[in-house]
Image: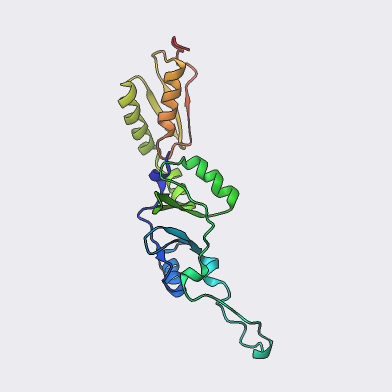
Length: 204
């Protein structure tokens, strides 16, 4: 499963020249946790998230004497608060590998960049949406792709995203491998196995 199949696109972006107030309104209205930031040429310049737009902007407790308040400094424009050292992914990257990266980095969303421009965004919600795909839809999609490659050789059964392939025809190791990889490329598939009773053919 590739990133392009699960990403949200087109991405909602904000320019470096936009105000932090505008960025906070976008985050609030759209329910996002992060926005890609683009430069004047439309290329990715970095990201801003909820912490970036909040940083030092909330006033202190009004009961605190003014003389006791610490100085606060905060940028007015997105370009003042943008984080430029960010993780990105590409449309052709493997979604499973991206999941590992996101978990290890502790990030909830990552911009998808194609030749410098923002093609979309991948979030935890996007990945959960893929995982929640109905088994019937997964089964139909797997069957369609297998028929294109193998004809009617494989029967498909799906339960909780797990795909099991069965056949009364012999299949060699390369064909088994291709069938598994084909099934696992379908959105919503968690894994694919071949039933134990399928004969192993020549060419192994």
